[in-house]
Amino acid sequence: MDHFQAVATVRSPRTEPIDDDWGSVISTIQLDSAQFTAEALVGLDTFSHLEVVFLFHLVPEDKIERVARHPRNRTDWPKVGIFAQRVKSRPNRIGVSICRLVKVEGTIITVEGLDAIDGTPVLDIKPWMKEFGPRGEVDQPMWATDLMAAYY
Amino acid sequence: MDHFQAVATVRSPRTEPIDDDWGSVISTIQLDSAQFTAEALVGLDTFSHLEVVFLFHLVPEDKIERVARHPRNRTDWPKVGIFAQRVKSRPNRIGVSICRLVKVEGTIITVEGLDAIDGTPVLDIKPWMKEFGPRGEVDQPMWATDLMAAYY
Image (cartoon, rainbow over all chains, first blue to last red):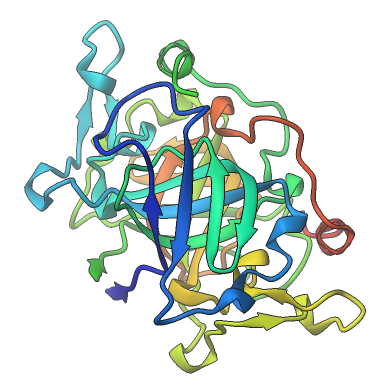
């Protein structure tokens, strides 16, 4: 289908995929200066949070899963479809995360709690608006709540 | 960079991009049956909401904006950078939305409030987990709140 080009790169103290404790990680998102100037970020600092779309770039093509599996290979959790979990070994390898904006300086954005490792290619940066949150009450299965307990 | 392949297609009563009133729109997300079976969706119905990553496929390459503009061309709102707004004419043309899951039948997911028009290529489907919501209080500028007032 389509060809995508990274708009920015993540610089993070985390250089390897780790499951948990992302909440206090401070990292930067550095715009590709060949494509963008600071003008692309004007007004971003009037938002408290961002939504970042990125690529799980370390997942090799042959590790992408298309059927069902146990999240984190935990057989005490149910086997669920690849689209019923957020594992990185997924078709198109796209991650989406909301993080707190710390500051914007030129073409560099500093954020807190972005669950992407050093070198991650960023496909998009969007401001978070509260109206984009889920409308109506949120339900999720117990395994998801268990999995997320130590994530942030 | 990378080549992406649609995993599904949106079928919606809305065939043209319209700014507002998406909240009650009922649409379906139809998995590409050449790539996936119903197994890819097992357990999805234990979640109340989904996050859908899709392509704003009707935006031509030469309409993509890379600097700053007035959201919805409203000159009474500030001129902000392309990454400080969620307009569709953005680099990589990626949309991300949270919608309510109505039901899953085979490889077809019925949803409510998905702001994507008929024929939209879907790049990823993720279950929404409440822990992925913004940590800490959300702030946003007045123009964003005004813009979103009639969106859903």
